Image (cartoon, rainbow, N blue to C red; front, side, top):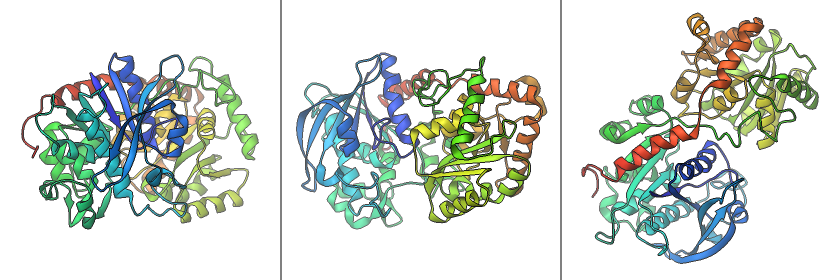
Length: 493
């Protein structure tokens, strides 16, 4: 099957969150399964500089007059020919400082509607045969940045060659790509596309609805999140639409790229290890404590936190529970950035207790690997979490996740109850009620287990052995793709 993946990010070229990890791993898994997969990306500088053998394929002129060039190159991978990558080369739109979505002052770019409409429109052009050498049978768009691809496809020319299927994946429903309704006229879509059953959302223009309304099939990144987003509590105002399309909505759990996240082969950690030989993890912890200025205590459980610093991630629970964590003899090492008040609060706690708390603001891939490679517990107490990759990395590296039982966290972490300890299924610590008491009880369970070394080793071994391979996930996506090629005729205009 010829499959075009459409995303705003792709690891290792450009990453602001988990979307990049998935966008980078899924095409490789599809290629390994014998499929013909390619990726379409915006021409951000980091992407253009990371693509090999890029050559022009076609000229693009967007509906609002923007001119760009479509390039085709490849992302070189170890031991393989690489992933074929289409890149939209439009320096006026993409050649800017800051991250892909915001300027250096963390303000969204004022023309983001055009920047990401171009991504969806270019995907639809490829679906209509823009590249004479390759036409997809299936377009798979990821998150709101690519969500207009199914809309452009649904309203595109009819009768030109074979029908192309579409799939839209929700990575986080809370980020919907909302813009002023006045921008709709620039998109080149017919007026009927801006309706309650289209891109209109309470008087605004919603890119997310472009995917939700017009894609043949919908997926999200965990089975529990697929159920949660159909409720008013987690549906972000779109639960009614999602319930109406529940028959075409699937939850496919994210996986871990074993070529990137594997403590037995990870070149970013000082000492490699596996579930049978864990001396490397002990050495990593001692080395990290030294580097971060933490007290060199092998018996102090090291809690690690790798996260965007936002309230959604439950970080006020971590702050509120930090005194108790330290009083029980624990240490905290944090890596992340985000809300200014959270950054300041964690910085102050590190200044107050430098031998027990380390805070590194920003993001570093190598530091993230070293934290998982050294940590005993990975904190992910999110209010909501579509899937979460952090807890999966913690599992893989034997840094037991402590999570709020929600979304993908509920699907991947088994609490250390007596029965799950006895059955060998326990892999971490989970709490149900989102609040200080539930979090504090989970932290106390982590300390209690840590003081029982044989039980700790058993749970850590179960965590490290938990399967999270992309082969299984890719097989599920292929099932969704097959269904998208034979859709029920209910939602297309």
